[in-house]
Image 1 (cartoon, rainbow, N blue to C red):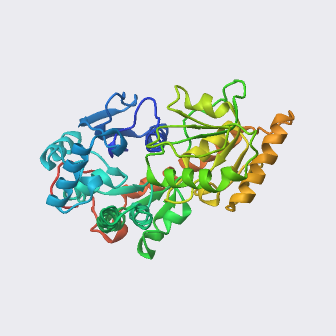
Image 2 (cartoon, rainbow, N blue to C red):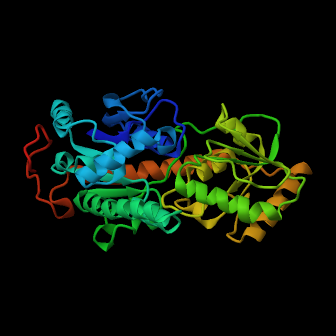
Image 3 (cartoon, rainbow, N blue to C red):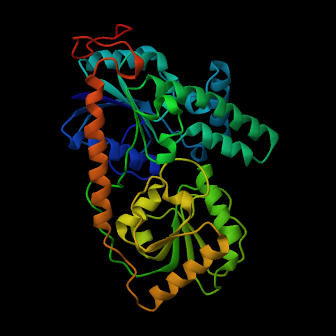
Length: 409
């Protein structure tokens, strides 16, 4: 099959963020099944596109709020207000619908489009709607926005998150209803778009890299290691919970390293806590940890940091939210949402690591199981793009492929 992967940010050669990792896994899975994949989207500045596919870049675009100034944020908000759209989709409006349509026409014939996350597909829904599609929902974005609204610091911030949730719900529901099939990364999200689409929604397991990762052989540098994109609100909520409610119950001789970009250093009195900022090798940082706390407290979708921890075989203590989308939890991970119990379990595991007891597992087994399930879901669902009358839409009849944009099927 010839598939068009449409993504706000295209898959990159060296994935860093959770969004990058999921994008690359999606692309690698499609290519591994033998499909020809053409990619349409923006490239984040300073990144190199993933090899092995045909890239059609819409330009360079920085979408991370923490990496842009107030002026750019104000421009995005103004664009969203003027166009009556979400801020996340307003970021995409630096190109025209005509340009995207021209790219699609030039790529014909193709069998369908894989709409990766809501931002770009919602911004140009009129362009993509006529084509058979699979919608890939990284999260139920509207629910995440509502959670952020509940925890907003002031009335204006609360208004902005509620406004975002209003538009995102409309876009996500429409994309899900129009799609031949829906892929999510967690079971709860599969059911988050309503009963009408639940029978064609499937959970897509993820891996952090196509080849099974090897855990770097490094000396243990800290008892606990946490790394993440803390500028993303759900991640920051988990970090704040850990610092405020778990750390006070940890032994004072425990060393805790927090890596990743952080807006404002929290005031925490634990003597062993260090904020180390960005690290040159995220995997080496995790491997240098005795135990990894998996601390998600909100949001939707899968926690890729949990998947990476399990792939590396490192012992962990996890909240239930950190295990979304993961069916087989390794034996060296324990789960609790109670902060005192979380701290107690961490202390127990650290004591065993310090005593020299082997706590690491064979992460290759977890990686292989995840990859096998992911490819099976893709194998089962993709033929639906060529089926007639799927999802209540008009059948294509005998037309085998889309050749030009004609506004219908």
